[in-house]
Length: 398
Image 1 (cartoon, helix red, strand yellow):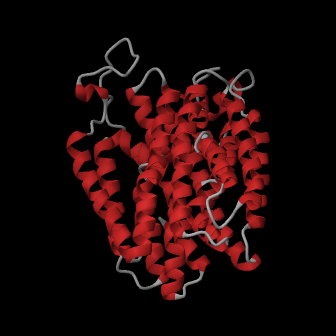
Image 2: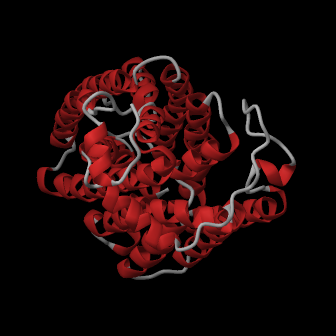
């Protein structure tokens, strides 16, 4: 949605693109920083309450955005409220749900849950872009708020916190697993996990890789794709349709990556994904056009397939290295992902204002992806890990 707001707000209020992108940056940073605390809070009060509260925050932020008149209000409403609410529903949430409800096929499940957010692009973006062009930017923002309220009304009575609440075993488990007692001190636990993980090398490698991932995916695409397409003369509806198509291929790529994660070394999968993404970003300035062409469709397919494909292997690596703390550790690596995304959203828009085009942005992000491809194989979970794990306070495992 932020990408669809840039041009209308710039034209209506004469706000600079950097001012508008600042709200998207704050949103993305909070989207990431909230995740580990939300994961720990879920262990204390349950997923149903966390999800319901998050959806209410999203609804409130979207409704208030519809009546704003100043740039700081966009930062407060969309950046702060929507950022906090959506931060509770990230891939960290998916990792926690998978750990509780599934004993087998975890890679495939995390791939499926990762793909769901990008399927939302397919459902909403073309409709929202059409609505922005026909009715202005306010009705689509209110529509999102109403949808969030409707989903909250379904979540509270239907969602269960644990398989035991439904009298079921986790998928693939041989024995019934009772619901664990609430874990007190959610915020303290999240910080303690961070301090332990920060004393290990794999955490910093995963965080660095995921920061580059965020910069080269949602950081640039969610807030700068529509303005970049506008620079090439493409209509907003066409640009949103291409981004929705990215969502389709992202869903397929996430499912495929989840299936592959169950069968192959996740580190090699990460290297392949980042290498392919780098090549696609390098090719983008050469194929960008005012209309939807075959090369643009090819870029959409290739980029989409590796867009979210990095999530299942990173979740699996966090689980292998950090055990039960894996979902919270992934939450902190996801925070790094969103810090990279927030920086990319703001700096990408600022670079456009300085250079008059996005070409330098695509090249810089491609270089970052190549760095991530080189870093992924360095994540160690084998012979050299036990001593380092022991120093950090984690149990010994291969």
